[in-house]
Image 1 (cartoon, each protein chain N blue to C red):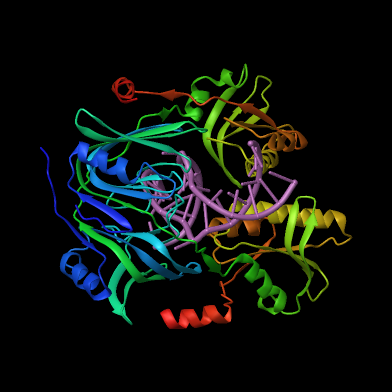
Image 2 (tube, rainbow over the protein chains, first blue to last red):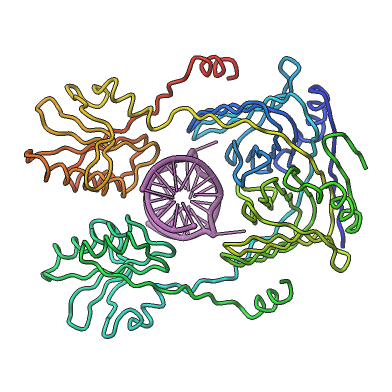
Length: 259
Length: 259
DNA sequence: CCTTGAATATCGGTG
DNA sequence: CACCGATGTTCAAGG
């Protein structure tokens, strides 16, 4: 069944026209409508930061949850925005159409003044679908727990998520010589801060246990040379692990069908 | 169909209509035009991850730089997207209008199939303005330099951006008892890694100077309790600072004028 | 080109 | 509500 829901459009309106158009179609139930404006505007923002954006042609999107996005013709990110829960008012000021948005906690406000408006549309969109991410990554921690030999022969894992002073150790165990082993797992690229983290854990365990020797292993899909050098400096070890992705059968079928 | 000089609009087109509309107005110079589609669609994505999004009414934005955003009626983030540099093709498949986007390195593809289209517009937008943000971290550093007493009475700043082994110290000076003081400034929320950083700097200075005592102060607008505890553990200090915005005269005027 | 760190990060899960 | 960790993070700066 094809459902065609209402969309209201106005092109090239003057300020007052735009205002009455929005008052008529948006103000009643803004929590059910999206509003899109294309036009030449300038933007002021004050809140967590403060910014000014001079005149230019942009696309403004007001969503049902109060999000307001100001998109330039390039870039993935909006150049300005207001977070969900923001309240928006519309008015004219010196014949210019103004969109003014406020948010509480954190306190933020954004003001968009339009010099020219090319298009406004207002629509009640319905979308109940949720994204299914099917490339379920096999949990590396699970993988190591179920088969510690993938890290090293004779390794026994004793605990996962072991709390120590500096934070939470991903995996804790002992090697075949009964030396304590700390394993820090990173999902993507390991960074220098991962090394610091691991180093702190090793120190914590060294202090708290009677073992003079404590090993630390950093596990990640990719470990830059810089990080490896630092690991060597601190007497730590590493293991580059592969990310395994499991697809469900029906997703396999879908993938083949669509691409 | 309503046509204006700077923006082309079509409403409620069938698949073939939509296709010829886009071929006519977009395909010539996609690097100069933005394209926006509102309609009932489903989205498949495969690349760094893999995902499926079932039918629903969404807003699709193709930007001049190849970015493609799929926006649901809620949320600040696009539910699906393709990065800048992506190439997009349009065609019909079993009478459905399809937008297919590819990106190289990393290899990613996204396919949007439309069941119903409410609106398409194509526009050549011009926006040369850049965002001016005021209230940067350097301002906080400036603030402390110009008035060290905002941190502590008797504090003297000797150097900013002092290079040590582990990195760059934001501010270095001495307190009223001539004890070296290292100040690490964070623009927003301080994290545990900030503590590690500061701790390394303190150790560096302790090693390189003859002072047995070296103080380290973490300055940030917000410091979580966890981080404070860690600071206490390591004998470090902190100061929650307020972001003061130093505005240029014209910005002052703007702020006063607009808010 | 690679790497690093910041962000008005956003967003979801957990206590 | 606060905090923490992941993100298909994105983005800009620096080597």
